[in-house]
Length: 276
Ligand SMILES: C[S@@+](CC[C@H](N)C(=O)[O-])C[C@H]1O[C@@H](n2cnc3c(N)ncnc32)[C@H](O)[C@@H]1O
Image 1 (cartoon, helix red, strand yellow):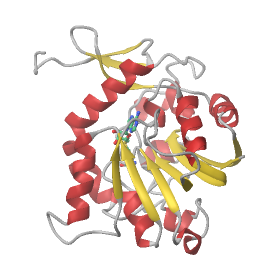
Image 2 (image 1 turned 135 degrees about the horizontal axis):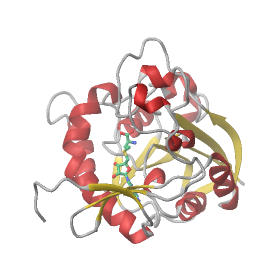
Image 3 (image 1 turned 60 degrees about the vertical axis):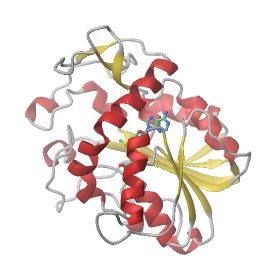
Image 4 (image 1 turned 90 degrees about the vertical axis):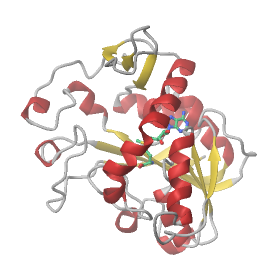
């Protein structure tokens, strides 16, 4: 492939396999840039739910921090495992899973303290696709995901069913995704991003493809109703849907997320689910 080629952005069908392959390649190629651009905001051992900066320490969506002690917690699409490291520091026993080898190398770098002091507590790392979790049934007490895997997969019910399978009954699963309303607007942090430009109801995936037409980046859109039905179909009860407001102290932009847009429309949706 011509390295200079600028991928073409389009909306088209992308299968589960094509989406998974595109994600692995994109995150392996872009992990270094992602961590150098967002690592300071994420913090080496903080648990941030999204670009608004909502912090699990304050939000307590997994329950009170003292209830995490000794719990086996699976983080899906963990990236450099910042969230898992915060969980470990609370006394939990986290496993951080990601599809991207390069993202997990950053987890090792931060955890080993290769470029400074080691951050947070011990975290087990697993390289796997969230659609086929390599764990036995009921292996975990809780699961979580901050923008990990779910926005990028063609079959989110499959991932949710896998998470449900590896959780014990009554276990909590909390995950954040791009707020579905954002799909109706251009992905632009400025005024251009404030006018509706596409149908909210158009579920056609966003795809960037190379000159041969192979997907190199894929995101999948589900409406709020779709997400609720997916959660229920996978065997969860939805107990809350959190839409973090943009806090005054957060002045930074993250891609299409900005204070300008954040004050007007939600940017992140966090689903709080309990395994039935
Ligand atoms: C936006 S990043 C979020 C990472 C981390 N949670 C954070 O907040 O920085 C999305 C992560 O999901 C991972 N991912 C994408 N598709 C996946 C899949 N099918 N299975 C597991 N991980 C996946 C990517 O490799 C990437 O690390």
